[in-house]
Amino acid sequence: MNCPTKSKMIRMEIPYVGVELSPLTETKTKLRLVATYDPKIAFIPLSLTSWVARKGASYLLDTIIKHAANLSGEAWEKSLKNSKDFYDWLKKLIDHHLATNRSKGY
Image (tube, rainbow, N blue to C red; front, side, top):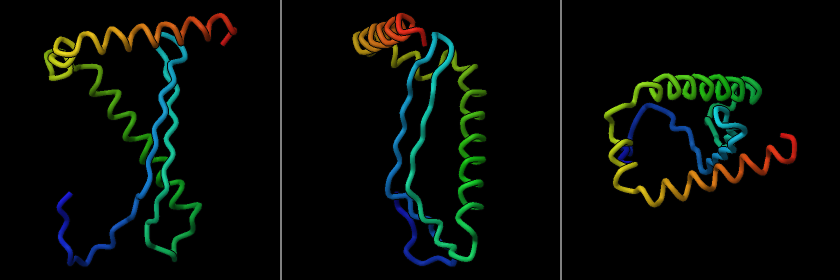
């Protein structure tokens, strides 16, 4: 990202972000987001910045879910058609994961 070098703003550093998506059922997915961040505002307690991060992540996910409900005709449909082999492979992988979890009683 091309950011200006001089600014009156303090830039938060986020050196690491990890996302884990685990299908639980055909309609539910567990999401785990792990991030290391430094907001560079030492006078604000870590508990408050953590709370803001959790609320922000929750808002972001709610917004994504809301917009994902109305994606027909969008670029993802083109991607599905252009990469059919990949998405067929991914579907088999998810179906296998769900079947394995069902057999374990999850």
